[in-house]
Image 1 (cartoon, rainbow over the protein chains, first blue to last red):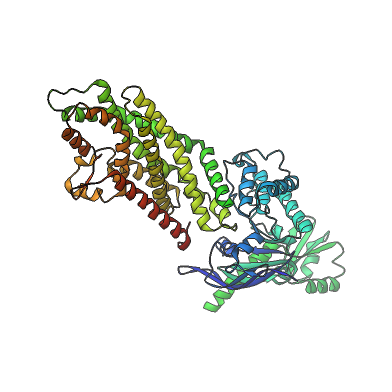
Image 2 (image 1 turned 60 degrees about the vertical axis):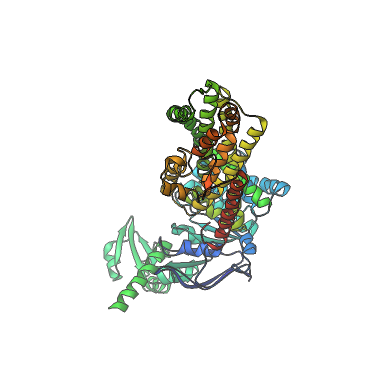
Amino acid sequence: MEKILEITNVSKSFGKVKAVDNISFNVTKGEMLAYLGVNGAGKSTTISMICGTLKGDSGSIKVCGEDIKKNSNYTKNKIGVVFQNSVLDQTLTVYDNLKYRASLYGITGNKFRERFVTLEKMFDLKEIKNQKVKTLSGGQRRRVDIARAIIHNPEFLILDEPTTGLDPNTRKNIWNIIRYLRKNNGMTVFLTTHYMEETTDADFIIIIDKGKIIAKGSPLDLKNKYAKDIIRIYHINEEDVKKLKLPYRKINDGYKIEIENTTLATDLIVENKEIFKDYEITKGKMDDVFLNATGNRIEDVYEENN
Amino acid sequence: MKKIINLTIRNIKVYFSDKGMFLTSLITPAILLILYATFLSNVFQSTFVNAMPKGIELSKKLLNGLVKGQLVASLLSVSCITVAFCSNMLMVQDKVNENIKDLMITPTDKKTLVISYFLASFISTLIVNLFALILCLIYIASSGWFMNLMDVLLIVLNVVILTLFGCVLSSIINSFLSTQGQISVVGTIVSSMYGFIAGAYMPMSQFGAGLRKVLLYLPTTYGTALMKNSVMRGPFRELEKIVPGNIVNSLKKSLDIGLLFNGNVVEASTMYLIVLMTIVVLFAVYVLKSIYYKEV
C-alpha cells in the first residue's frame, strides 16, 4: 500500500520540554488515523512538523514519498489542514477567503472559478458565499474551513479537533462531509479529537502522552488490550449474579459485569447457561481505552519509581 | 509574482474591511490637523512675527501661509509614519488570530508573505496619507496659498517617500511583535515619540546641542526636513520678496528646513539620498530577516 505519511524517529523539544519524543508511524493511502492525547501531549507539535511550519530536532517526515524538508512545496500541495479554530479572514467573504487561499496554491482565474463551483456544490456554499466569515454560524464556518482545506485537492487531510465546540447535529453533518471525502475522493485523514466516539471510523489509532507513543493499533486491538468487555444480564435476581463471583453493578432491568476479554466472557457464559438467558455483550468504549492506556502508563512509571 | 499580488490584495482588503482600523487611520490625520491648528498655531505664529526685523510686518495671508505650512509639514511627516504602523499591524493581527498558520501551510515562502505585507501596508498608508494631504491642501487654500504645481508635486513625492520609509520601519519593528498588548504599546510609543524625535512637533533648534547632534544621525530628521522644504517653498518664496536673505536663511535654519551637519549645509539631494538609502537598507534587512529568522 502506498504510504502517504511516514514519520521516522521524530523528536522536538522546546527548551527542556520534550514535546515530541522519538515517534515513528506510517499512514497508508485512504486510511484514517486517529492521533489522540490529552492537551499538551504533542499533537499540535506533530501536526506543525508534518505541515512544515515547525522544524523537528531529529528524524524524518515524508509526505507522499517526499521529505518535507527537501521538497516542502510538493508536500504542502499534498496536505490540507482544518485547524482547531477557524483561521480564515473574518472580515472577508467566503468567496474572497477561498479565492485568496487558492491563489497561494497557484489556483487562479478560471481554474479557481471551476474549483469553487465544485466546492460550492459539495459544501452547500451558494447561500453564504457572499457573507463575511464572521457572520456565519459555527457549522457554516466549519464547512468553509473544510472547503478551504481541500481547495487545492490535497491527498492528505489533517483534521485538528474539527468538531470541538459544535452542537451534535452540526458534528454529525461535518462527519458526513468527512466520510464523503474519504469515500469519493479516497482522502487519507489524520484526525485529532477529544471525542472518542469519533475514532470508531478510524483504521488505526495512536495515543501519545508527553510526546511519546504509549499505545497504537486498530480500534479493536486497543479495545481488546485496554478496555474490558461488558456483559449486561437482564431479568435475573441478585442471588444468581452473586454466583458468578465477579464484581457487578445494578442497571435497569438487570446487572452489568466487566470482564477482561471476550474469551473469558464466552467461557463464563458457557459455564453458566442457566444464568445467561437474556444478555448482551459489548466491547469497552474508546473512552475506556484512552483512559486505561494513559493510566497504565502512569502506573508503569509509578512502579518503576518504587 | 501572482502570489505576491493576490496576497497584497488580500491584505489591503482585510485592512479596509476592518472599519475600526480604517476609520481610525483616516480620522487620525484630521484630528491631528485640528489639534495642531488649535495648540501649535499661536506658537508658530509668534516665531515668525518675532523673527521679522523692525519695520517689516507680514501680511495676514503670508503669516497664515507660513504657519499653516509648518503645521501641515509636521502633520504629514508624522502621519506618514504613524499610519504606516497602524496599517502594518495586519501582520501582527495575523499572528494573534493565527491566520498566519493558514498562510504558512501553503507552498508560499516567507519572503513572499513579508513582501506582500509591506506592499499592502504601503498602498493602504499611501491612500490614507493622500487623503490627509488633500485635507491639508484644503486647509492651506482657505487662506495662505502660495504654492505652484511643482510645489504640490514635490509634496506628493515626499509623502510617497516618507510613506515608504514609514512602511519599511514599521515592517521591521512589527515583525518582532506577536501579541495584542505589544501592538498597543508600540502604537502608543510611536505615535507619542515620533513627532519629537523627527523634529516635527518642535524644531531641533529648541533642543539641547547634544540631542541635536544625535538627531542629525537619524534619517527621520531628514525626512521631516524634506517635507518642510517642499510644503514651505511657496511661502518662503513670497517671504524672500520682502525680507533680507540672511533673515530668511536663519529662519529656515531655526525651522530645520536648512540642516547643518558638522557646519556644512545638507542639500535636499543629500537628504533624499539619505532617506532612500535608509529605505533600501531597511527593506533588505526586513526581507533577509524573514528568510533567516524563524518568525515571519
